Length: 267
Image (cartoon, rainbow, N blue to C red):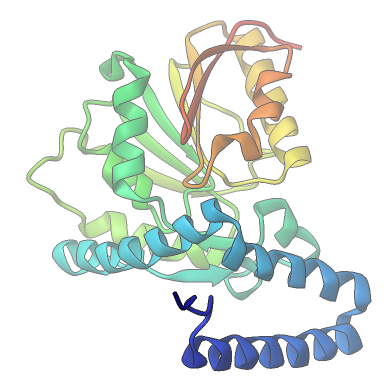
């Protein structure tokens, strides 16, 4: 009985080429930005090839990118693609607060998260923190929210969102009051009305902590129902601890891709 090799000649060549290119990039990055930064990016790059969850995400990303382009063509808007925050008006020293990159929400994840919330959506104003080009705002309009508000820090993304919302129409649309504000979430004051605050993985941990605290203070000044819905297309475990350990929040529900909490105390 013969044993088949683990890798074919073609696979070996492909792996060798990938390693060679990666090594050259690593050396160049180490020269320009330092060895720690180079090693961090190398570790992340390797994870995309060997960690099953990362590989699955990469496959889904290809499919969702095609669906995003289809969405844009259907509605005459621009939401597809990715953009480093430094290229849309965010200073380098602040880009890390927003995880460094713009990517629009995947519709299937968005709709699943709202279904799982089981909230009477007609009672709430929908607020998207880090609303980007307005994808979640447009998707939210298919539900009977009282109104829909986006908060976006990057001027370049905000400008695209304003244009998108001005002409957006859909047969499924139930809410027609859509607006977006160019503001820093750390300074923006939540409206004094029942809120469903939506977070599509928009901030690093320290920024998210401060935004949650600001929302909790708003509740203290004007007690009302405020829910926080966090969505992550990989796994909410990446940042769930920030929500679950915050003293102002009570966990309502959790799945792999969404986490729902309610403000029950202010501080």
